[in-house]
Image 1 (cartoon, rainbow over the protein chains, first blue to last red):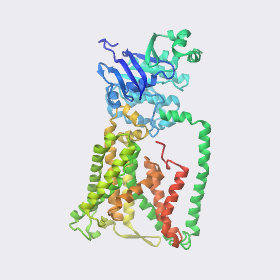
Image 2: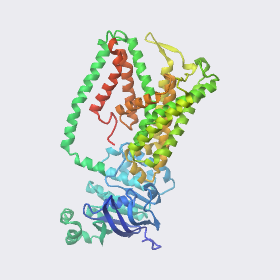
Image 3: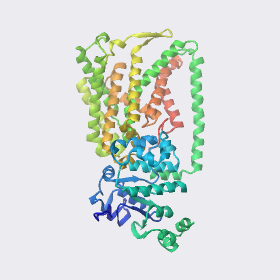
Length: 245
Length: 358
């Protein structure tokens, strides 16, 4: 929560899905300027939630408010300009563009703002070395840095990240965890959806567990990481085993 | 998301098998190209042009014919591929915009020169050609923008419906142009300054064709600079890759669509004016040039500017060389070579040379 007591993001009774099949069913949660992780098994609707928050998928009921202003039902470009940036699953970089072009195409709106292409290169020096490489010819970690950097250029209040640690080497996940903490320190909220429980706990102090399209439980700190019984209950045995090692 | 799924489902075995299937025709095509080159260079006695080693002059003229015609093809097709690449709209009205710009430019040129028939090239200054060209192309661009705003925008994402709408517009425009401009062939007159011949390898060659190539190269360079050096150009290229993600970055894609359609229609208009200067226009030219644009982008790959360059060069080469280097009694069948080219390219690369699956 921020000083005024009004949450940054407030989601109430959100329903969404594809055609007749409902994926999100009366989902509620809210967050302030903090990092929040959403964890859960495959197929619980995590990506659907992300897509709905940024307007890629229309919601069928409920509401999404950012700083008290409704954003549900708006076009993705309006939501982005109102302050929700998206780092989607699989990064979705533009293979035709170089690293520098990914940032340059958004540079016009960043003058005198906190995040400019230069600031992104400062945060991720490895990207600066790859300026002229195409988006498709980067390592997984570099791609993720570029996807995050691109989202930062919106100078948004909230960044939604879908599976940012997917397919990344542990050292790169460290870089990502640091970046998330750094952003929160600077006043940018981060909502991160993660399969990787360890990464989720390291990025976000508060974790919400999603089960069948709704938030089922909430944990703080590393409680979830140290309690196999909770993991079995909410995340399924297979996931727990993987994550514990 | 679907793309990821497809990628995930295409395991290593499928991918390898597909690669094997491709390799064989690739060799066949290379062999065909080499055979054609050897034929043209050494064996083509008894053809209108004769073997290149014995008659180099004819070869150079044919080559010039090929690249200059390719220039015109590129201008005509680049707008088509630009619009398709970003918006997935198959703009069947592209040929109509081509023809309309040509008619308008002819009218403007007649007004500027002050004569309506038998304009002599010596009366046409450079401006008497450039101004009509810009006016004609701008009219096409504005009409294209109106078509997009009024008819296509609210059918966004429904590609078949958009194609049918633009097809209907083609029919309406063809009738209206017949009413307004009549059924006779019209012709733009090249500026007098470029209307003469020069000699190369003992053969006379029209400077106007080289001028046309120069204009095409200039258009290509400007288009390249726009797409690669401006932020709007980068946004368009990004939109070709992933439209939804571009919107997710806060970019108003509708405005980008409008600009793209305007520019694409402007390019169609430029092509029309070049075409009217090169070979004249008449009712039916719209269909011919829609077809030409389609052939170029099918060879080069829908949506790729690089592909439009490659497609224009290949198509231009076939159009120029086939009648000159087929045995005289078969010259009439030169058009078939175009289809052979299409078939071979599609056999090796089903999405065209630089195309990607949608």
